[in-house]
Length: 222
Image (cartoon, rainbow, N blue to C red; front, top):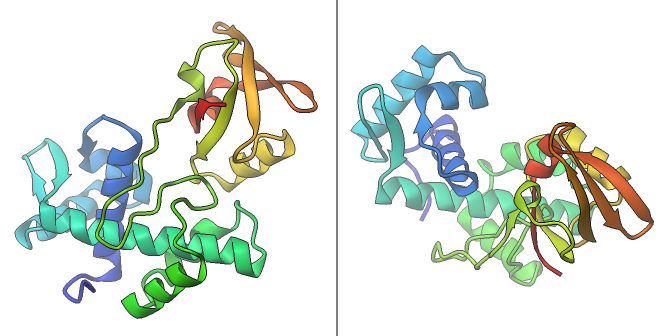
């Protein structure tokens, strides 16, 4: 179903709230949305109030923001579009995984539902995008992904990179240069808590990775 009543900006708000809840259990607040979107708190507050009045959000005064069932449906629709477009750009147009996020942000508002489903068919109904993010099915269901943050994983266990946050193209390029792309296998050799780094063993030898970068990587047992 296309969200005719929603502007592109409103769709972005709903998608950002949904993806924020996908990555963390922390409540989503107006100040957090302001920092993420780069808009003033007052502008974000007005947008949240409007979406709440339309039935897409709930918002406790000075509290957290949450999606209603209608808001979640609209958000998942946009997430599906975004991740299918990213996958198409990489697999058919030769984009790198660090180049597709902003391109998909623009295209996702322009394509029709018919085109989105045609992309899904052409791509073979993929279950994840180039960053490992699960792609919602047409009915809104998500494929399971039992992954944990690399920063919280135990040393000595064989691991495989299952997902990487796409919020920073620079980080994606950095990880690619270190041989830490999607599906790369590795293990934690040592955690240097006070130095804020992990020593990793992967194909090609050992590398040092800062804990902030490790926060952006999700792994599964290899």
